[in-house]
Structure formats: C-alpha cells, structure tokens
Length: 363
Image (tube, rainbow, N blue to C red; front, side, top):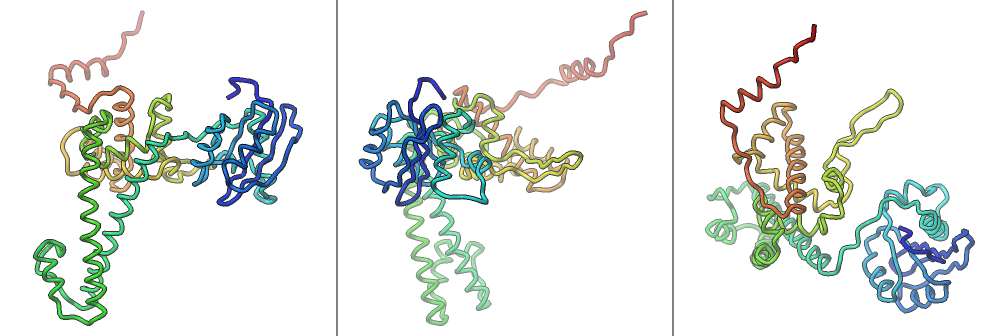
C-alpha cells in the first residue's frame, strides 16, 4: 500500500448528501476535521489545502463510484476498504461520523487495511448495470405471472394449456368473463409481461453481441449450463480475474464456500459464507440448476454429491462451487471448457494396481 511516502492520510465517512473527513499526518496528529457536502469541487478544494501527497480511504458503500472518480480526476489516490473488515474493527457501542472517519484514517496510516474492494472501471460498471437490470425485469415478469395464477386459483379457473402464457393461453386469459377488478389486474399484468418480453429480446441480442466481441464471454459460454447471459454476468461481475492470486480466493469471493464457527472444543457449520458478489453467486447457482439433466463431468459431479448427502440444495451449491473453479481457470488461462477424456480399462487397471501395491519391507 505504501508505494510512496504520503504526508497526509484522510478517512472519509461517506453518506448520501455529505461526507465527514478526518486528516492525519504520519505521526497520527489530526490536521483537519470537516463535514463537506457531496460536491466534487468542494472535496478537491479541501484536500488541496492539506500537505501533499494525500491518500484517502472510504468504506465500501453503494455510492463510492462517483466519489472515487472525483478524487481521481483531481489526481488523488483513494482506497475502498472492505466493509466487513472496518465493521470488525469499529466499536458499535459508541459510533459517530467523526469516530468512523478517524478509524478509517488510523487504519490507512498504520497500513492495517488488508481487504480492499476492487474499483471496477466505468465500462465494466455500465455493463453490470444493464445485466442486473435484466435480472430485475425477469423477477418482475415472474411476479406478474404469479399474480395471474393466483387470480385463476381464487376463481377456480383452469387454463386449457399447460403453459398459460403461450399464444393461445393468453387469448384464453383475455377472453375470461370475470369481475371487473380481476379483469383489470389480469390485463395490466399481461401488458407488463409483454412489455418486459420485448425488452428481454433486446437484452438477449445485447448478450449475444458481447459474446461475439468479448473472448472471455464466449469461452465461459462453453461451460455446460452457462448461456450467453450467464456468461456475461460471470465475466463482468468478476472483472479482472488476475486480481485473485489463487482459485481459492476467487471461490471465496463468490461466497459459495462453507463457513464454520469454532471456539475451543465447540465447532459447528454455518452454511456458505455468502460473502462477495451476490450476482456472481446467483449466476453460478443458476448454471448448476440444470446439472442433473446434463451429461458429462458436471452431471457426474452433481450425482456424486447427491449420493453423499441426498439433499439437492447441497448438491447444487457444491456443483456451483465446481463451476466457479472452472470459470476461474477459463478466465486466467483463456481456454474453453472441454470434457476430460475417459481412461481405457487397461490404464485404469494399472492405476488401481499402483494404488493398492504396498512397498516391500527390507530385511
């Protein structure tokens, strides 16, 4: 972190409309303490009055992007600290904006911030916004479909089609002779579903275009169960895969690793940690949902997990974790997915003999 000597270390407690700043020198002496409105020119003027060079740290929040861009535009270095690490070092019993900013400045000055959030570049953030909005629309579409199903159930009406939202099924729904308010809810939900489907067609073309232009998206789409949309989500929610030194770090970032609470002789599992990117974890779980209906390595891995525990949820999460390992190898090696070759019976017999043969004891 200390690649050059900074004269001033600034902790910034960022909020929606204002930011509280605490500036310290190398010895820890407090140089300035001020509350400033969230305007880039005001913040840069404040930092410009401090002994240069200056380094600033903020906690990872939902509005860190504009703050970092404003400081970088002024030539200042800024770090985004991981929220969990700052929360673990803070005193929740006595909390204020001033104390939070002082804590951040002290951690930065003492080189005590181990977890740093990656600052995604603007093009990556824009594509993330589009992909996340796509999933929000998909959830809204499902909610409207469920609303129509609830109306049919309450009125004891059965659709003549297995898919109530196919072309003939929608004609049937619009032709129903039901109460006026039921009719209004159903027609509005159908109109919103059709509007979302129109947008989803554009989104599908957008993801297919990304798969043609971005090599990593195309390589990720070679994984069984990963289409163009999931490949885009994995690619851009990961960002630069090279920032993870080992595959274990990447899998931990997905939050799919099991957690444990241990104290002395007491120890119990707490499920997966669910740390890191929610959307990245969601993409891997979605890709693993079809593992039981596939053929190949991932299918065998899924059924192996099922034989161990017999619970589908655990098998899905384990398969999602395996897909995360595969995705990391693809993004770091720039190599597509391929099924491992099956060993011939003769080679299998030789391997088993080597495993079971014991070394001879010397006389």
